[in-house]
Length: 114
Image (cartoon, rainbow, N blue to C red; front, side, top):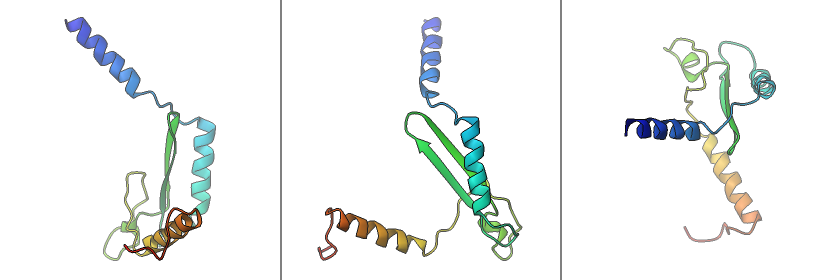
């Protein structure tokens, strides 16, 4: 019975690690893009981004300063892939663009009732 449990755990662990690592050349190229996107300077905000290829690999990168580094009263902090950023009013642009794209594709009419 113990052997069956260990075999089951081994199979589950192999299956759950089915997504391969990002190829090294691609990971370094993506990180270079992120690093070149963010202007240097202590007061500039940073970026945390990711690329996910379903069933193949995922990559996450960060550069610049996290929000704590540019908010008064908080110490400067280098952005990490685990950091979260306040998005503020930028969501308005994403929503407007999404709505207009849906309308353009005939999936929504901006004159519809909500």
